[in-house]
Amino acid sequence: MIRRIPRGLAAVMIGAALLAVTAGISAGVRRQDWTPPPHPHVQFGLLAAGIALVTWGLGRSGTQENQAAEADPRRWWAFGLVAALTAGALVLRLLYAGESIRVLVDELHFLAGTLSFWKPHENIGLLTPMTDTSPFTWLFPYWQANLVALFGRSLGSLRAASAIVGALNIPALYLLARALFDRRVALLAAGLLAVFPPHLHYSRIALLSITDPLFGTLALAFLARGLQTGRRLDYALAGTFLGLTQYFYEGGRLFFAPLAAAWVLMLAMLWRKNAAAYHWRGLLAAGAAALLVSAPVYYTLLARGAPLAGRMDASGLNAAYWNGLLADPVNGLAAHLTRRVFPALLVYAAIPEATAYYGGGLPLVLPPLAPFFLLGLILALRQFRRPGNLLLLLWPGLTALANSLLVVSHASTRYVVVFPALALASAVGLEAACRWVTRRGPGWARAAVPVGAAALLAAVQVGYYFGPHLGSFDANLRATRPHRDLEDTVYRSLDFPPGTQIHIVSGSLFDRGYANQMLAFFRPDLEAVGYLGSEELIADLPRLRHTTDQAFFIEPEDVRTLAALQANFALEGPFFSPYRVAPERQFVLFFAPRLGESGAVDGQWTAIRLSLDRIYHSGAGGRAKMRLY
Image 1 (cartoon, rainbow, N blue to C red):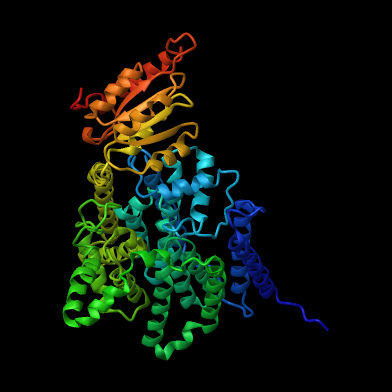
Image 2 (image 1 turned 135 degrees about the vertical axis):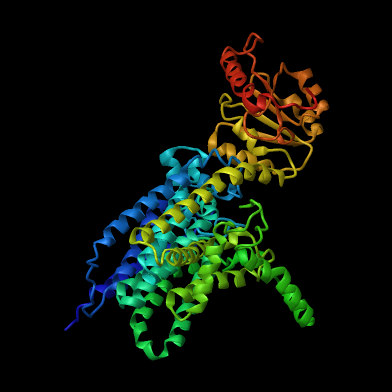
């Protein structure tokens, strides 16, 4: 007699089969294939269904578990507060996301990735690496492409995926903090993360690194719940979210699995007498879920011969560095501590980061919040045997240790994984400080003081980020580039007539495809041609037709190019940027409207000229003082 397969096992088998099909699709995709892969929607559906079935199957238990809901009525108003904090966090992350930072913060890879989903003959396997420099799956650009299709082609739409993921970090941290600490600490942690400036920043630009703390925090949250309750579903969810960290930025891929393993192992050693509390069956379910969910990514990489950790290979300290350190261990270790380890620790609360991705000239934790952050770590160290305190020490500590193995050890992009821990440690310190201040006060003070302190810190952090930080960030990032502002030329071209030929002439070497990638996103009917110096443009002038609108962006001191253009075209201009771009970073625009059959300027130029006059001769751009004019 054939025995019936348990439902849980059947679900795991079907889910694993769907994941295997998804991996097989991506592993077999080549651009030259005659048979295109299924539509990305189909691939995403297979992946989501496979993950859901594996999680449900592994989360089923053969024994009756106590899953009764909490009877505490405060649970529901806490959920309401978390929902309000999440909504507020989303508003802060979407607010002028496309206008406040008008320069791409290394986002061109994801802008180009979004464009790939709109190309009719592009064969995309969702789990294949995007590019050699961005060896991540296509899941994040897939989300971005769908949001852009929904809300329109704008920087704000491109960055909406980051804003949504960043806002979801708030309830994820609440779940983790609530499992490890009390409700007050959990609410304070969620509130502090909602306004934490580095987290705000990385939620407002179109980089996928903000996904790391979401899935990593959820994995730790459900692992903590599983260790408390023994529920198999909590363990399965922990493993699933741990597996999902493998689909995005390499920081999360390489960090959260070792962190979770180190946390559980150290708890087991500290609590040897209570080892049974760790429910080995649940941990096996978590491990199985993590392996099954992450397997498609690594199968695809292996099948395609791609490196398993491409970013680490490019950014990590190489063998020559370690050989040099071992050749002179004393001096080498001292130099390593000074140049790598100490900056990786001090960036939390003492020194600014090393790149312009976040910048600002201040450490990750602002000075007003730093005392509470340090107090939280000190309190955790005093009672490190507690699960929450141990995690609070391991999370920032292992992050700094891992980053000390990189060439640049205090770059903010590698610290996105630890942002929830920084907010949680600050919440622990803030709650302890408020409790000490109000220890002899009335009951209302014990409730009001933490709320007031959190509101004040929130106002300070939000005011700093949207004030001084954003006020200087855009200009500082532009100043790091050797050439004038290419993004500005794109934004100034968006109202040109269809088919306008755009020409950018620069004396400094620049990426000629950069502006075209942006134009393909905003205005696919326009295309820019880049020239290195006036000689290239002058040689190309005979082929330019007077029956086509021509736009020329030149440097203000480029007298030779201007003379050649004036000799060949009836130019309108000069036009300067209306945006917040320093005059020394701008190109000057001259526009040559197309001529009709009679040789006169085409009739629609009148409206275009009025539009340009309104745009370019108003605001800061119209008042710019250029050397040539």
